[in-house]
Image (cartoon, rainbow, N blue to C red; front, side, top):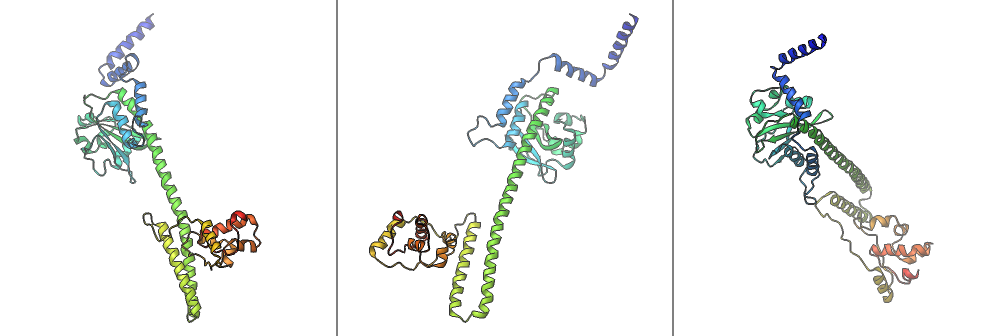
Length: 373
C-alpha cells in the first residue's frame, strides 16, 4: 500500500514539475488530439480528390494540365491555398522555378533556392511555416535555409519538400489561404505523406524524359551511321574519278562517263540533304501511279519495236531495286520476254514485268500480258 502511494506521489510531483514546459504541453496536446478527438481531414475524401487531380480527371481529353501544375494543385487543395509554385533542381543542384498555379504575379529569381537551402530540405525534409520564420521561430535551422525573397513575400505561406528516396526532387511553395490559420500536426503529417507520393510521380516522369532523350540520341546515332556510310561512298567515288581523270581526261568516252558519275553523285547528295532536312522538300522525284497494262497494250497494238530503256537516275525511287535485278544490270531492256529468255519461271515473269513498268519502261513488241503468263 505504501509503495502504491509513493508511486502516485512521485508521479504527481513529476507531472507538476514538467507541466510548465511548453514543449511538453504541446506534445500532450498533439497526442490527445490524435487519439481522442475528431480529425480535421476526411482522409478518404482527400485521397480521392488527390488522385483525381493528379490523374487529370474531369479535364477534356488531351487538355490536362502539365504534371508540375497538377502537383502544385494537389498540395494546395489540401490546405485550401488559392495559388502555388513548384521549384525543381537544376543541373547545378540549385532550385529553379518549374511551374506556377494561379500565381502569375509571384516574382521568382533565376536561382530560387541555393545549394545550402536545397541541401537542408533534402537532409531534414522539414515543412516550413513561413509565418513562424517571420516571427523568429527556428526549429531545425530553417530560418537560415529560407531565402530572403521568400521571407519578404508575405503571400508565401508554407514550403513543402518533395523527397524521393532521400533525394529532393521538388519544393512546393504554397500561397496563403483565404482564411489564415496556423499549420498543426495534422497538416504536417498529411503534407509529408502527399509530398512523398508526388515525389515518386515526378521522379518517374523525369525517368521517362531521360529515357526518351536517350532513345532520340540512339536513333540519331543510327541515322548518322547510314549518312556517314553514304558520304564515304561518295567520297571514294569522287576520289577514284579524280585519279582516273589524270590518266584518261583526253578520252571523250571517259569525259562522258565522268559527267554521268558527277550527275549521279549530285543527285545522291541532294537526296541525302532532303532526308536530313526536317522541313525542306529536297530534290526528290515525285512518284505517281501508272497504269502499266494500258501503256503496254498500247505499245503492242501499235506494233512498234521495243525502245531502249536506260536505267533510271540514282534519285529515282526504283534505282535501288533496279540494281538488285540481274536483268536490269546486264541488259538495257526490261520486259517479260527478258525474264523468260533468262530462264526465269513463269510465276516470276509477271512481277519482273510489273517492276520494269514501275520504273517507267514500257518496252514490249511481241509478248503477252502478265495475266496470260
